[in-house]
Image (cartoon, rainbow, N blue to C red; front, side):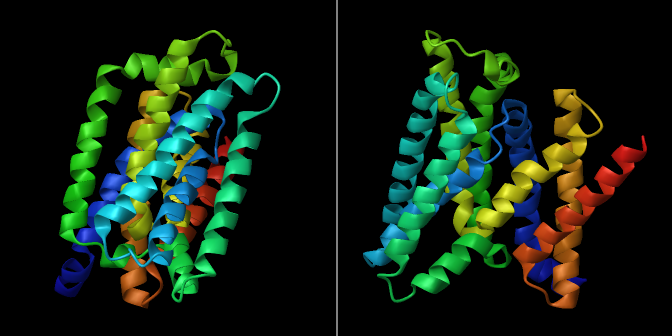
Length: 270
């Protein structure tokens, strides 16, 4: 038990933070029906990391962070702007295009780097096992800062998500709220992508939200129980990974998949 606490305390703390913040964003994303927006933003953040690695700046945390922030900021602005086209083109299609182009650019850049293959593997799978308390504190401070406007203007954010498909071309105010939502999510992803990885970020964002949506349509209920499901599942996954000496990120994703399958079976029985 003492060995587990020594090696897994920081990853466990990170998982608890991820459980709360990504479940919140996941409930909004699910309501908007833009399921792959986080994986697209994560891919853009990964593009910044890969670009820094290609030009040998991977050890400069600030340059890597700024490059990732630049691409996420550009993606957030682009998704908000193209929302006016949703009457003709589904937003999910635009998000998919951004993802595949971002992934292809990342592959091209990685091919020019000595450590490109290893960098890509780390970006996809993450290295949450090696997260430090300094990383956890940074993540906690960022989440606390982001939580302030989302709490103060919670009615605006929920109204936007609830009426997302009823957007009118002249509603510029909604575009700015949309941009703030994407940017907030993007900032959390930028801080998380090198440690959690793209696969685990997507899992934390979508799977708990989908599980609780099978049983309740109330946002508050989804947020509370989704966070609990996420926390318990991720902590169980950490214990399983530690005891069986399995890759941590992949183990967590598979645990979430098993819980989802069980929830789906129970929901069909009701």
